[in-house]
Length: 440
Image (cartoon, rainbow, N blue to C red; front, side):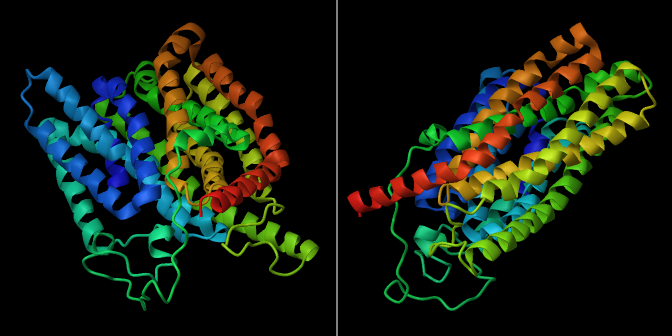
């Protein structure tokens, strides 16, 4: 629920540039903190900060512009980190074989929020005034925080192991819905406590850096499409008003819903197919290490990315067609249908990469997701900044040919990851083993 709220915050677009700096920095700090100290307390802290900032924004005087800026930055600090934290939880609770389905379902919130946000925010603003948006966010965030305190347990494995270790009270839900037989630490040895790792060091891994770059390119093109909907549709289809233009966002929003759920099932199916082929070659049950991660020679990169490469080609074709539909002022149904397809295919491209980066650095799910947010938000901000300039210079047709052409040029990065990925994973594992030996 708290993921959907982020889309509502984007209704106030006049202040997005300053808030983007906090959207980049906050997940890096809170994500790394959660990988070391636990998910649950950081979740509660972020939601509490978000709730308080929404109260302040609902009450801020209209002449206190500086205070509005400060509170918006504080709001972004509380909301942006939840994506990285949620990805870390998936890395904790889901095995590689089922991680694709989990991540596909999880992606619904962050992608559906920006589609529903303009519609809900516009209705609240027109009916009750702009302050009602922040009261709505405050109530919804407060409910999410209460749900987190009441029902959600800690998942970080170095604190709770497989979920059987009794953690300290701060990590336990007030109402334990999922009841299981807890063990004391002497009965179930706790995993070795890891030292704090600087998340920026993840960029030194070439395979991860290539994945983050390609994912950011696809995300920036997707964001350029969504950011230009209001301005393009107002010019191409002058019969639309503000309300009906807001409804046009639903096409791409529901496309992301279909894409996320469908991609999760495809990812799990691809993994099982690759698993069967690997077991036939190497012997039964030989693809997993004692810790539950896949072995270095298992082609996890190929399992995640092979089907995605075909989706990328179709996405590029639809993106170019979308631009030319607007250029030729085709019937409004044509670009809306293509928006839906673009939303679905964008998820079928981005979700496999985000699932793969969780596979590549087990135990650092929040940190690597924060790194992903840094790269894709930077490129997304650049795309939003220049999209109007490119549209005015080239027109919609050639603009989206240019943007989708960049995706095509970047596709060799995927094949490099599939080819070189196992070698990089082996080096990381050997480095981790040496670190544990040196610092037991």
